[in-house]
Length: 497
Image (cartoon, rainbow, N blue to C red; front, side):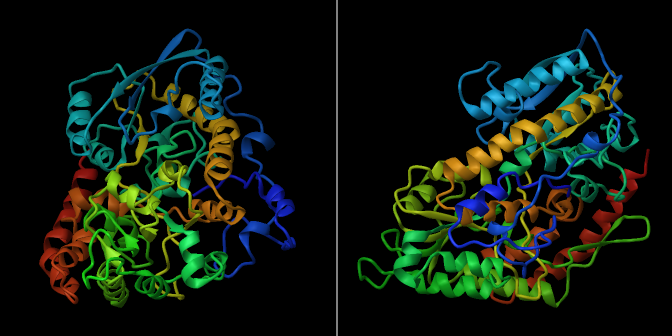
């Protein structure tokens, strides 16, 4: 995806003791590169800064622009709509000023309709709305999993055909959007800096630095392992095993013990494990269409490692997915690692007394080229309904909002809120950059449930829940035929218009 420049890298280089600048630092993060903390990278210039603005003369004076925005307990509407006024909070005020600047720039007035849909109702409700001819909304912001189904039903406009957007600008996540396309060309789901819920729902691992120091030594050693490309499942399993302590000495693993890792059940919590590897779940044919290629030695190895971490003596998996008990156990120094957390959760641990660190999920092994960050399937993206009054206006508004977010809101949120308020050390700041840069292909996670017999998830999750140490081959075999047919149906539906 297109990446924004690391705004505070020069500052970090000055702050860190004993740091020396590396030469030739590039945009991509290399697993074997020198420490990302001490790289000095100038902010990238966008095409909007170096070339004439293609939206220079575009205005829609007097028009109302209507946004349907999800406002649930786990959504990021506060980064879309905000409070609607200045209140002294840096992030809120940046959102307010961005929205006002966008309105002034294009001569429009934003109106918002908040929704509170459960993830499994998004597709049906949005499709019904559009198919009924409802033309009240110029932009819809909803879960990427549900909206992928809406796109296959021909209810969304292809944004790649619009003249008022330029997806090559750094404010758009162009690779991510293309990966969410059935034909690897059309763009129905909008992902860019304005749609910050995608960043908030990026999975990351938190670890207790105080506990690491007590049990293993310098907690910065883990950062160095990550930076050298040596952070793998084998190393993770080793730490988790060794961190377990039977606190009450009863010989049984119970809620009173200290664990190497805690995770909220064996379900959706497996997403960052399954999709954070380099297993080739799909490949693209000559037309860009997906074909099933996941069954290989890497899949079997991945299952072996996932099984090893979930059923380690040092892991406890029954704290309830997304439950408060899971966070409370970690904050009470009850575990070395906590899984299931996302970047948007980082602030929930701000009051934790122990030092906390942040790292990406590990590589399958050292042959994996880079760390891969998984975005949860319910992350919210944008879409232009086919009933929108003026798709070109929607394109222009989104282009301006993404630019302004890139320039103001994102630096405020990403650099100040995530890094300065919540990060306990400078290395954590560099890890956030690494996690961000690892965000990648979401096609299998987003489309797999509705259009591939859920084979990408359940080939691993099924036997894992049954605690079958070598069950992935049989589970895959049971699902393969139906998955292939479902992918064929997906392409038939996609091409039916």
